[in-house]
Length: 335
Ligand code: CP
Image 1 (tube, rainbow, N blue to C red):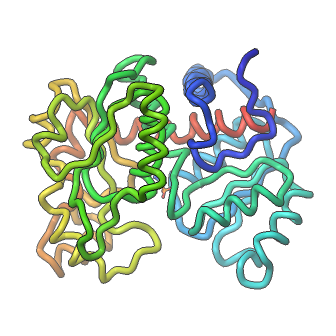
Image 2 (tube, protein in one colour):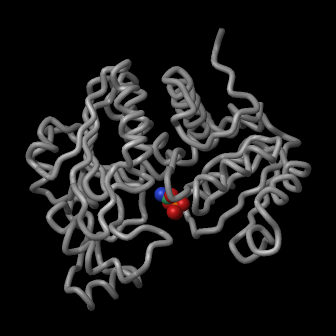
């Protein structure tokens, strides 16, 4: 029997089998081809979705909006200031209201428990648009980008995440373990101030999955060891959404050695690509970038401008792929 995700929520990739993830990736590629050729695909006409954002967004919001509209759906966006959720109305009540009006609900916010609770009570598919713990739609787009570069069978390919563990690194660990992709997180390890490493439960769970798929999962502080034989080098901002600004000083001191520079890229495979979920601090052309430069004398952070703008960089292709993969998730779960 083929894969059927109809009626399922998309909360973490841990809930999906290798076959289901491969199905979503192929569906994303198919949707990308339809979009590229201008072929209409309003397969979900008559349905409506709501997007709940408790944090800011460019890519995720636009991917859900354009993806939803391409599929023929009505789309409502609720920003942090324009719903009652969390302030005057519990998640549970919000879910029960929205589930009666909409066919699907996207949520971006804080704790994973919130999106889990929404899904438990809404009675319609709920999609995780980023929580403190996971960013599963991002990981799908990242792997679609790798497939476009290296082919659909990524087994044995190597992805290196440079920097500290957060929701993006969590979801990359999960998807790599599921698909048999070797994964290395390279950054400060151990119990040092402000540092987050993999929580034991997720690390152990992914190692268990990796035993079945053949993925090699590791963490290291050693950059040379990490990037040797790498097919993709990935990084993310040093201070994430919802984290206090006073973390910058600490993070710069801890993570500066792990900036993705041309020298780091040279140590990877010659055809290695650079990936980043975006937004990125690769120059001082943003308010935050300019403030950090003035305060700490650092004009580029997690990635050098040279690498960001290089031929190896696939960051805008990856950003576009957010839309194709999110469209695939919505279609697969709503059809
Ligand atoms: N990568 C990502 O989630 O981007 P946004 O914060 O702009 O949605």
